[in-house]
Length: 587
Ligand code: ARG
Image 1: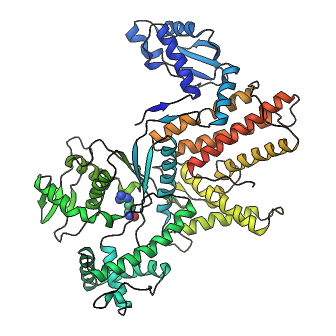
Image 2 (image 1 turned 90 degrees about the vertical axis):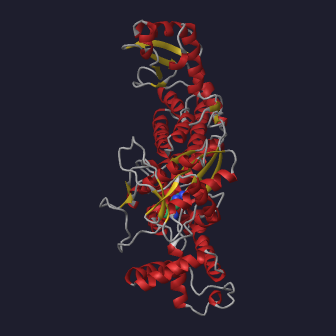
Image 3 (image 1 turned 45 degrees about the vertical axis):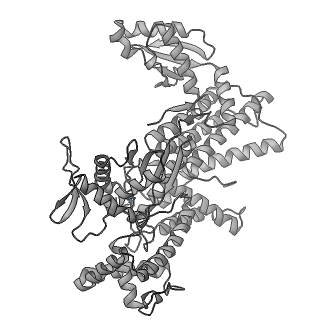
């Protein structure tokens, strides 16, 4: 979806060496690419580009590979080149070249990788007014924020928008419920005045909605009342507007605190309500052009295609009572974003997988209407957070878990783990438990593939061992303390020399960061980056076990290994930062 703008990454440099060799051998250069060697004991990298050329060149692949290997022979970046199997080219990189790459990466973990910048909107979070954030929002916030950082880190102009659910029937239900309980509120007076303060707080508000919804379910009169209030709000009744905006502000304030806890940043705090003024004109346009058609008193847009494997129902644009619908609002939001950002190239929606049909309908309707020419619309859906029973996670009381419950549980577990630590005062322990607990939740969420659900197990995810956020954080903290100790003893990092196999493995592994980030961006898959930082932390452990650092026999070797420590830390910290995970000073 994107093209690299500039890159001096290890893989780009080797690919350039391969391209030169392919050209020298008179071969097309498309296949001149190296990948990680499948057998690291035989090679660092391998190029399989000879195999697909056999047909067009009328030669057997081993002959082609041999010609490429001959052209590569003696290149200073390579120690050895060998043809293996049916025509694989195994490459062993020179220590000199590896040291060179590692040195460059020490000052820029991304090794200059930038993509041709594109304007992108990421739509994530999406909480509804008057409802607390629940575990479903956790995934949207965590994945969305990581994608925001990954894409921005590659040089894209990324705009995050929370797209609040602040319109529709639930708002009318609330107005009706509130008028019954507090009829004396100044917004219900004639003439209405904005309420100076509200008789309820966010906690009360979150209870009002289920109460209102239950009343409407049981009593058709209450439902009729809620519908009338929805219509009044949507037609701009001043008193209704006043109450609505007070409720919206109250719940947004609470939600903003949750965003800060999770570390999600929003450039825009827009919502469904913001695009309502565009809807009448949009509907008129769609009707005029015959794209929206009447059906049983409603207006629909046909979005089915002949090639559909599953039935694709039409998009419902307006009900017979003219009320705004979720899909109508999303379609208008595309229009609004295209108007707001004339250079818009993509919109990415990080929303529950169960809404995939909705987005497919909206995208197709936008395409039919020509509302987003040149804009790639992508649905990045995610699976559910499950409890140990494999069903969507519930609180111990059996209710839908709120985001705060989930975080508190993880922070509590981290605090238990830190309890025996005598070197921490209460305040430091509490702060550290928070950093670790939140990192643990985020890492667990990010390390499973987006569309698959995962089991939330607070005990396991705060562990310092295994595939966890705290394990990776701990690697960073440990490296920092090695570097501190070295500095205290008067030793500084110096020129890198790649000698031992564990050093080679570490440098090769760290150098993959830019490729992994580019791939995570292309696939909208932060789990690739989570896997990478975990693997690199493991590579570091092996290096540290095999290669004494402070106790290195030779001062040059010690200085080189200290530089490798600093490099690893820089790459890990950068990778974690792109995941939205902070590293504490000590653990
Ligand atoms: N408010 C919606 C919900 O809670 C999510 C919004 C997702 N974004 C969007 N553009 N529809 O289900």
